[in-house]
Image (cartoon, rainbow, N blue to C red; front, side, top):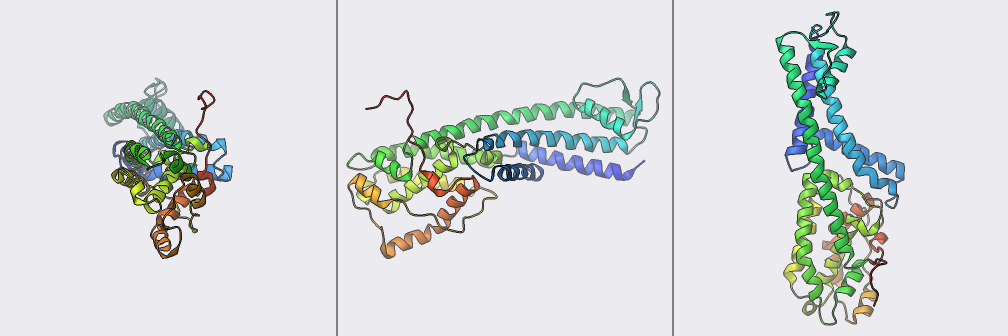
Length: 345
C-alpha cells in the first residue's frame, strides 16, 4: 500500500469538492481553484489579443473560461479518485486474468466509472472498493448534472448583462449625449424616469456579478453592448447631473441617487481590477452648454477642484475598469444607438 497516493488523493478530492461547492452553491464568488483558472484564462486572452477590447477573439473569453472550469473539476476529481485506488495495489483487478490493475489501468477504470458508462474489463475487489466505485459513479453523474445546471443561470445572466448595456446605450452614445437627449427644454425629468428602472437592473446585475464572477470576463467587442463602457458612461452622466446641472433642473433626485448607488454597489463587487494611475479627463462642458443652452455650475475654481478631488478615487477606478477591459476613456463615446429599420424623423 502506498500511503502517499492516499494522502494526495484525499487532499486533492477535498480541495476540488470544496471549490466546486463554493462556486456552485454559495452565491458569493468562486472557489480558489476556479478563481485561479478564471484569472489565468483571462490573462492568456489579454496576452494573445494585446488587450485590445475591439478584438472579436475576446468575445469567446467567457466560453473558454466555462469550458476550462468544468474540465478542471472533472479532471481533478478523476485523478484524485485514481490516486485513492492506487493506494491499494489490489483495489482494481483485471476481470479476466484477475491480475492487479496498473496505475494507468486504474485511471482508465476511474474515467469510465465517473462517466457512469462502466466497463467489464476491470472491476473493484473487496467490499470497500465496490462501495467506493458506486459512490464515484453517482458522484460523476451528479457533478456533470450540477455543472450543466450551473451554466444555465450564467447564460441567462449574460443575456441580462447585454440587455442592460443596450438599455443604457439607448439613452445616448456618451455621457454628454445622455444629458442632451434627456433634456426637454425645462428639466431632466424624462431621464430621471429611466433611472428608477436602471437602478433596479444594475442592482440585480451587481448581485449576479458577485455570485458569478465569470460575468466580469464576458466581453463584448461591440461598444453598444459592452456593459463596462455603458456603466462608466452612465456614472459620468450622473456626475454631471449631481455637480454641474443647476439644482432646479434636476427633478426626482431620489432616482438619480438610486442609480448612483447601484453603480457603487457594482464597483464594490469587482475583483482584481487595478486602479488607473491617472485620472480621466472631464466631460465636454462646452458641448453640453451649447446643446442645452444653460450655464453649468462648478466648471472651475475651488469648488470644482474640491468635487473632483473627492471623486478622484472613484473615477480612477472607473478608468482602470475600462482599461482592464481593453478600451480607453475615449471609447466611452460609442456609436449612435440607431438601427436601419428605425424610422428617421
